[in-house]
Length: 509
Image (cartoon, rainbow, N blue to C red; front, side, top):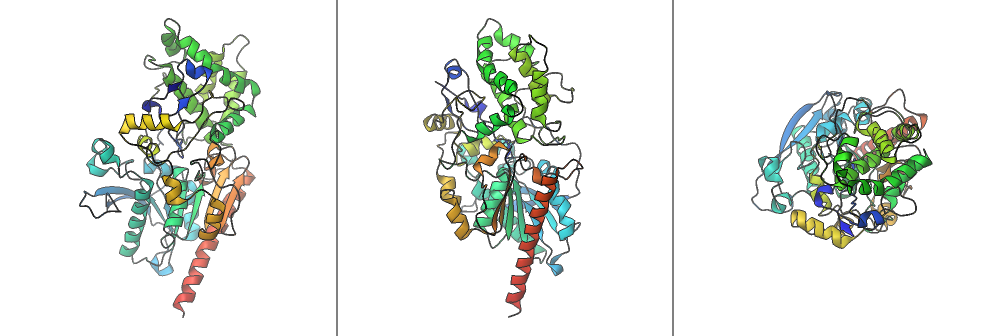
C-alpha cells in the first residue's frame, strides 16, 4: 500500500476543473509496486491561457474584509472584479445584474470561457459582473501570493463561505453606489463556480433571485454518491469509443511501473514521452497521463475548443483513433504517447512536455481539498481503466497534515450547505436554481440530475460535457445544446419577470 504525496494532489475545474484534489491510499497490484493516483480537480492543471480578450469589460478592485465572520482587526485585501455595463439598462429600469461566481483560478480565464453570459446580457439589458475568488488570480490577501500561501494560518481564510461573503458584500456595495438596490441579481457558475452559485442562492436568497449551476457536483461529499462514480464515467467515455483503446490504457499502468524499475528505465521513459526534464518518479508521469484522460472526458465537446488545451471536436474519439491506427507491433506505451499527444500537443507545436505546469494558479485548491472540499473517490477493478484503489480517509488526513499542518473536516460542507436528503431540503427551502449537466462529464455523477420542484430544475443532456452550456455559441452547436440554452434563457426570464411582478405588487399597496 503506497500513499500519494501532496505534490500529486491535483480539482478539474470545476471547473471546472479540472476540477477535487485528494491524497489517497492506493490498493492494487500496481500500487503495491509504487504507483499512485491523484484525484482530478475541476480544472485542468495543464490548461493553456487564452489568447486575447474576446469580451469587453473594465477591471476594478474592491477592498474586502479578510474575515467576514469575526470582528478581529485584520488586514483587508483587494479583490479584482471584471464589470461591463455596456448593455445595462440601469437602475431606472431595474436592469438585472448577471454575476458569475469566480472559480479556483484567474477570473479573466473564466470570463473568456463563459460566452453564454455575455451573449444573453444584451437581450436582458444586464450588467455583467465577474468577481475573482479570493486567493486566486490577483485577489491575494496579505499583498502577495507568497504571503497568502505562507502557512496554514495565512491560508485559513480560503474557504467557500468567505468567498460567498465576498460576492455578497461586493454586489451589495456596488448596487448601493449605483442606486441600483432594486436591480435583481442572477448568479451563474460552472463546476466549483456552479457549486458556489447554487450555495449562494440558498445562503443569500435576499441578494440573488436565482442561479444557473452548471456541472456543479454539490453531492460529491461523504457517502452521498458512490466514490467510484467519477472514474467510472471517465472510463465509460473511452470504452464507448473503443474497447481496444480502453484496454490499452488499462494495461499501461503496470507496464509503466515495470519499465520504470529497469536500469535506465526512467531515462528511457523521459525520451519516449519527450519530457523536458529527466523523470525522477514514475508517479509524476502517471499523474500526467491520468490528468489528460480525466480532462478529455470533461471537455469532450462536439466541436474544437481551447478551454483547457487546443483540442479537436470529440477529442476522446480522436485520441482513440490515433491509438488504434498505430501500425501492428506498436507497443502499448507507444500507443499511449500517440494518444495523449492529442491532449497535450494537438497543434504539434510542443517540442517537449512539462509535467508540472500550472498557468492558472490553482494551487490553492490543494488547501481547499485538505480542509472542507473533501470529495471521496475510488477506482473500481471491474469498470475503471485506472489503477484500482479504495478511498482511505486516514491516509488522506495524514497527507494533509504533512502538507499543511491541517486536519480535514469531511462533514463540514454538508453541514454548512446540505447534501444529505437533498431532494427534501431543496424542495422545502430551495427555489430558482437550474442544475445543468451533460452525462459525458465525469462530475455529473455528483450533481443534481432530477427535477426537485417547479423552480429547482435539472437540465440533463446525454451528449453534454463540462459546463458546455456556459461556453460561447458556435455554428457547430448541436440542436440539443441550442435547446438547452433556450430553456435556460426562458427560466431566467421567468425569474426576472416574477421578481418585478412581486416587487410592483408590494410597492403598489
